[in-house]
Image (cartoon, rainbow, N blue to C red; front, side, top):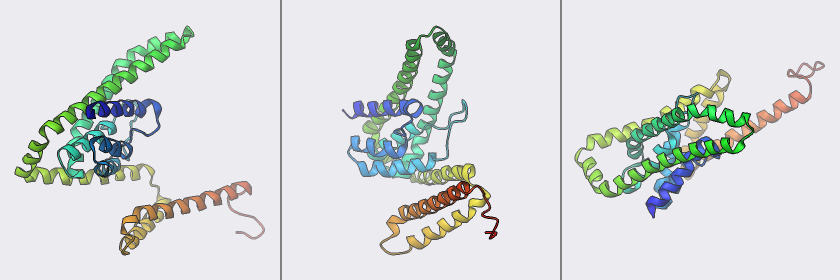
Length: 262
């Protein structure tokens, strides 16, 4: 039953990534869901959050695909639960599977490219069923490929979980390396996001948020809520800035009135 449910949720997540676009495929969503199927929601949530930070700045550009978040998140959760690995170790171990997902997406896109002529002909002939069937074909191929990889990872984790755990106990340096690498990946992902989004005028907010997180984290009883509290402060600042810009635009001037110079 675990294999069936893992296949189904991975199948749906694979389709969602490119078709539904409901963010069901995000690791923060898939992690606890896979964890619930395997009997450990808490581990799934931690692994999903860890993997989400790693992928937060990754995005496809044209035909170039980043390591796949669906495969990586699902496999990381499977290894964390079945092989009893730490979240950072599981994330590091799942990266090769994410690369397999990346290659699968590129392969399926390549296979579907020649069929675009079929879609053009269907549109010319006013045949929406032809276009619909091509979309269904692509979705089935992608979902099936991802589902098979997830089931294989689950089979390996279930069959060799004890051996994997024993291996890492024997070769602790590999375990430490995966843990360090997996821990670094979350910061790399966030750094990519900052590089894309951060402009010079936002540096003040960045340092203010860092200071607020440090202060709140040092207060006993509030350390566990630091990220949520800083996010609420950020939302309040963003809302105030939005309302101010709306008022300025509605007044017809970006620089205030001419009578008082404000």
